[in-house]
Length: 443
Ligand SMILES: Cc1cc2nc3c(=O)[nH]c(=O)nc-3n(C[C@H](O)[C@H](O)[C@H](O)COP(=O)(O)OP(=O)(O)OC[C@H]3O[C@@H](n4cnc5c(N)ncnc54)[C@H](O)[C@@H]3O)c2cc1C
Image 1 (cartoon, rainbow, N blue to C red):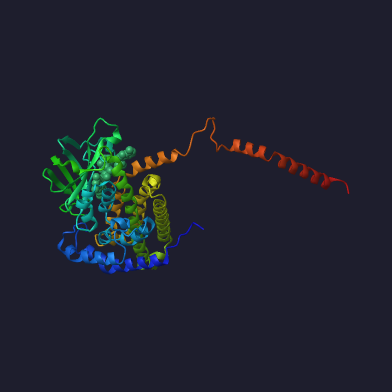
Image 2: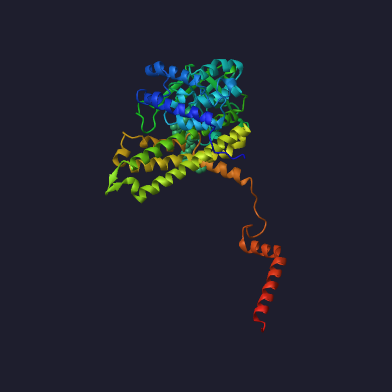
C-alpha cells in the first residue's frame, strides 16, 4: 500500500519535542530581538548559539541538507512536517539552521562552488557563523530576468561588476552576496548571465538604502537597494560556469519556494487555531461566535483551504524526495507557489475579522500575516508568472483536435456508445418486444 498519510511515530516524537521547544525557547525571542536574521544582535549572540546546539544534539539541524553538508538528511517530506512546526516564528528557521535565503544559497554553494568557495563561504554559513544574501532582482523589473542589465566585464583574470540590484534581502546583515550579472550579452537570453560570490565589504558595493515592508519600521528595512560601482572581483568569484546564471538561480529558487510554502503552512495553522479559539471565547447576541452559522462557514472554509494547501505541499515534498531533481517537480512547486498567497490571505483575513477591532490592531499578528501573503505572491517570482509557467507545462500533456467539435462533445460520444453497444441494445430491444407481445397475447 503506497498511499500513507501517517507520520512515522519516531519522527512524531521529534515533532512534539520541536513544538514544545518552539513554545518554551524560540518564540519568546521574537519579542526581544527585532529581526531574526540579525545574528549580531546582542541578545541573539547570547541565546541563539545555545539553542542551535540543542537542535544539533536533537538531530534536527539544517534538515534541508544531506549529512555530507552537515545537515540531517531527513528528506523533504520530514522537513515539510518540521517546518509546519518551526515556521510559526521567524526565529524558528534560524535556530533550526534552515532559514531563507541562506538555505537556498547553501544549496547552490554546495552544488556549484569550488573547494575554495565552499571553505570560505559555505562552511561558515552551515556553522551559522555568517549570513548571506541573493542579489538578482533589479529596480527596473524583477519578473523578467532577461531584462537584467547589471553586468560583469572581463578585466584581465578578474571581473568588473557594475549595476543596481533591488530587494536583496538581508544584505544589511550579510557577510557575503551572491549576485547575478550579465557576462555574455550576445548569447541566447538564458545564457547571458553568470553568478558571482563576493564579500559584502568588497570596495564598490554600496547599500543605497534598506527598504522595509509594511509592518516594519521604515528605518529598519532589510531589503537592500544595492549599487555595484565598478566592483573589482577576482576570477575565482565566479560561482558555477560562465553563462549558467539562470540554471544556478533556478536550483536555488526551486528549494527556496517549497521551503517557504512549508513554513507558510505553519502560519495558516496559527491563524486557524487563533480563529477557533476566539470563536469559542467571544459571546454576542446571546451566544458564542462559534454558534453563528456565518462564523462556522468561515471556519469550515478556512480548514478546507488549509488542508488542500498542506496536502499539495506534502505531496510536492514527497515528489522531491522521490526524484531528487527539481526540474521534475517544477509544475508541482509552481502550483504550491500559486496557491500559497491566497490561502494565507484568506485564512488570516477571516481570523482578523472574527477578532473584530482587536484583529486589526497591532496587538494581534493578522496584519503581518496578510502583508506576508502579498510577499508570498511576489518573492521568488510573482503568482502570474508561475501561473503561466504551470499552464505551459500542463498544456504540454495535451494536443488539439483536428475536427470541428471537441473530443468531449456529447453527441459524438453518444453515437460512439450506441455503436459500441449496438449488439446489446438490439438484444435488449428484441427481449422487450417479446415481453410486450406476451403481455398483450390473449390468455
Ligand atoms: C519581501 C521580498 C523579498 C525579496 N527578496 C529578494 C531577494 O532576496 N533577492 C532578489 O533578488 N529579489 C528579491 N525579491 C524580489 C522579487 O523576486 C520580485 O519582487 C519579483 O520577482 C517581482 O519583481 P518586481 O517586484 O520587480 O515586479 P514586476 O516585475 O514589476 O512585476 C509587477 C507585477 O506585474 C505582474 N506581472 C509581471 N510579469 C507578468 C506576466 N508575465 N504576466 C502577467 N502579469 C505579470 C505581476 O502582478 C507582478 O506582481 C523580494 C521581494 C519581496 C517582496
